Length: 336
Image (cartoon, rainbow, N blue to C red; front, side):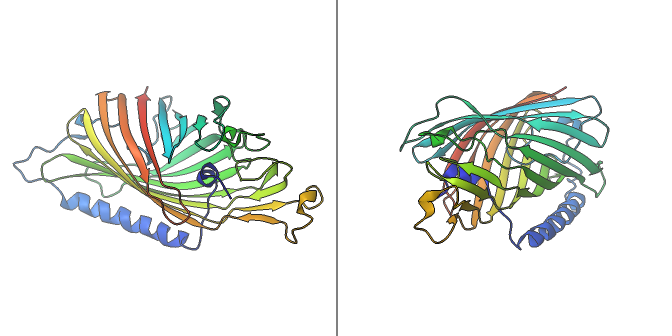
């Protein structure tokens, strides 16, 4: 069977995708209308946007783009806890504004796994590298009904080790596949009756992967002597996030997420894998589809408008072919 790490890497989309995209449009319209109707009473001081500082929630991407020449650097440090196993890691968002509407960047990942039923990672490993570009379709302006909306394209390259792992499956940090992710991100603000700002993001994305050639022990659950390939399923992910401005420096945040993962298939090459002689089918594994719901509460503290820290945890309960995990994390957000 696939390992928990492999299921986290590969996932898929079903026909539900169209309904979730429709839900995105309904949510954006509802939030923008709420923005107009939530004007605080005359006796409440309306917080100015410039007086609210943010790092961003734990998971949802921003729909805004950086001004030309400006840079955002946001490293995350986390521990994915599943039972008595730990997946320590770091992923960093490095973004640069090219124009007022276009931001580009990359996401490097490193990790180290400790497991309770085998050997831990031999050393810190490098994961798959992602390049991204986001184009801003609209921008938010105070008093406007239009949220900020951005279209993001990500391309993930198989730079991480994923097969020929010997006796250490925990050394696998990649997928072996090229993955293209298309995302629609939205962000808006509205004012509560007490005058404080509530910022909301709603993102939806779909990911599609190429096949991956697989040899021997791999993140796909194959063993020594295996020769074949994996067909990772596509993936759907939706994230609604809210940030409440307690004061200029302090913010409370919450993400609510949903992911649907389609079937991943692992197929052996009967010519190169003689161990398959007694098996009439070449299919070694059909993982089946899976669904995962998650919560990610966090608190933000901002020293300045350009520098802040976020501390939180992502919680995914065990569900339909989903391993339950708790992932405490800390992130530093810096914009220059």
